[in-house]
Image 1 (tube, rainbow, N blue to C red):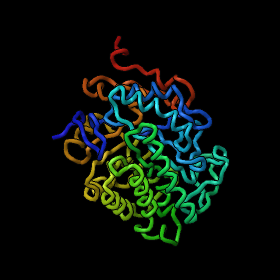
Image 2: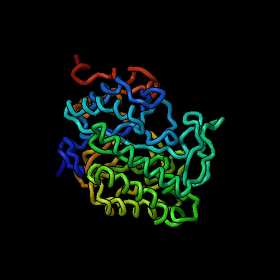
Image 3: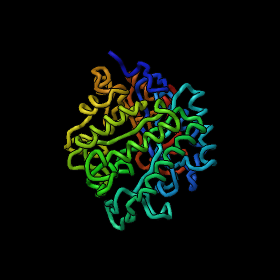
Image 4: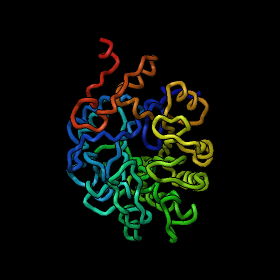
Length: 357
């Protein structure tokens, strides 16, 4: 039976273990979305992960509405990623860029542009005033341009030294907005039936795979429950065919963020779809959310997953795989410093050896 500490091959990427670092928005880039030197230390410290999946990284100005998040659409941004990927590789790690189009969740006060989505909708917000703008429904030209942006960002990622990319297709962002009938109200070839609603995802992934190779292409989906106002009346009807389409493309890996009824970062009573998706997608499957080392090991050993991705645990435990290996206690992260500028709560968490001393 495989263990969390066994190596795994993801398409063209060799990972030293099956303890992956999930994407985590941290807000340490410049206002122009250029990665900073501080990020070199942050990612190098966590190079013991079998695979680092970076924070969401914008594919375009219109698609990145989060302050101080990094981008991959300019030469300056691409060049600034190079010392980060080099540091991870020097430390023996592997790293892919999560490429991100936020769709209707791209705030106009950040982008200076009207957001783009599958349909003309506005995302909800937990209080007023709502910072999200009314999105414009994507035209066919808009769709083609967004797919070009994914492919261009992926090409820039390889130029920057990344081992591959993961398209962000989860959490209510642009790809997810096309997938779900709660946000996709179109009546053309990109809306209506599940087959049509997965078209944007399938074409976008295919464009990236054509640009950099399917063996360096992954995607993240969040198939069950509602996230940031995106929901579906019958998720199995759309996400299982979506997984089947991804399997036909031969991508390197598929990651699922699945909520549960007792989730610590989003809750739902909608059943998890990973068992059905596991049947439809035969490549490496990565599961994420609310795992401990025991539950992660159990799902890898049983074949339910090929690897497990941890997010918040990696914030305060840069050497998380080693802590798991030793059965050591985990440090606690501070939510107040998740998105604040500077090293506090970012690069000042100690590895186990230093913490013990």
